[in-house]
Structure formats: C-alpha cells, structure tokens
Amino acid sequence: MKNLSKEQIAVIAASFIAMLVLAFQVMTIDSSTNDEDIKSKYKSSMDSILLAESLILDFSKENKLAFTLDIFNFKVKARKIVTATTKKDAVVIKTKWINTNDLELFAKNVVVYSFYFNGKARFTINGKTHEIKVGDVIAVGNIIQQEIVVGTNEPTGNTKIGGEYSGKILFIGERSVYVDTNDKDRVVQFRQNSDAKYFARNLMQDPNAEEKEAQSTPTETPGRRNPRPGGR
Image (spheres, rainbow, N blue to C red):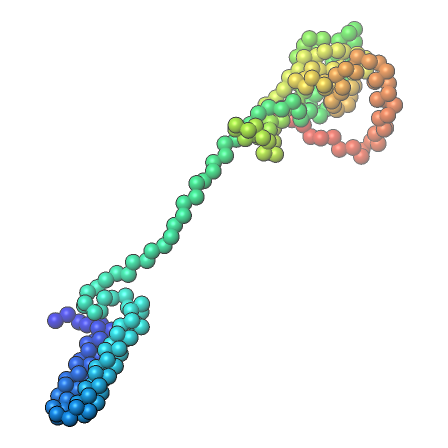
C-alpha cells in the first residue's frame, strides 16, 4: 500500500466519522407507531444527515484550492496555471545614412592658403607646399552624413562624419581662394593664413564684399583663439 499524504488521511478520517454518524442515526430510529413521534424522530434524523452532508461538502469546497493533489481520487494531479498572453508586433524601423551638403572644414593646421604669385596660389597641405591654379582639385574637409528613416526620409537627428570631400578651385585672388562645394548657395573661402570658412557663392568675385567682410571681422587676440582641430 502506498504512503498517503496528510490531506488524504484527513479526508478518510472525515468520511469515516460521517459514516459512523449516519449508522448511529439509522440504528436509533424508533419504529414506534406514534405518528408525531415518528415525524419528529424522522425529521431529527434527516437534519443530522443533512448536517453531516453539508460538513463534508463544505470541507471539500474550502480546501479544494489549497491542494495540489487530487486527494479525493488518490491520484497525483498537477495544477495547470493558465496565463493570458498578448503578442505585440515589434515595429522595426530601418534607417540609412546619406551625405549632406555640410562639411566639417579642415583647420589651417591641415590646409591653409599661404601665398599668391603670378595668378597661382600656394597652399600648405599637411606640412607640404603645393602650387595650385584654377581648375585644380583640393581637399577642404569631411562630409557630414545624416541618418534618415527608410521610406519617409525623415531625419532621426543623428549625424556622423563621412568621407573626405575635395572641391575644384573656382577663383584665385590675392586675398582669397574659393573652392566649389555641392551647396548651390555656398563655396569654401580660404584667406591667407586663416581657417577655411563658408562664403556666399554669389559674392565670391565681388571685391566690395571682401572689403566689407574684412572691416566687419574683429581683430583676433593672439593666444586666445582656439581653432577647431582638424585631421584626416
């Protein structure tokens, strides 16, 4: 005979006691012919039987959730836990990087216009001197790339530095050299021994524009300017 759990033993004991109570009630039934006594005793016996039955039923109902075993059938029965699960479709957003018309221009420690002679410009590029004329191509900075959403082309706000950009020399003057860019409104201006900067394309050959710009530009205090670091 297999070992019984405490819950199974309790059920057996309760059932046995109920059977004894029922047997006692049946044995004490009076066979008297008095109608009133019979009715009273019968009612008393039935009440006792109903009370015993209700106790057994209440006992099984109150403890049903507390048992992990099916003790009424003497079988091991695993309780099944049902949980509601909801599946959410994961939205995958695809992005890509594209080139913009903006450049991170090299500082003068990388590329600088140093000297004008006979219609040509001398540039110092990474410490080496080069003589450049109109139509030549020169590296001026790195392309700034922008991240956009595939399909909608909406920008995510993220940017990064892309590859190097080289532009064609458009104009060489004694004061300035202008280099072409992909921006229809701007070119890159090199002034002697200064950092490169953007300049309005429609003003690049206007001497008055350069004079006004030179007058409006504040004089630099030596030792207090921190040029943007450049490099390739």
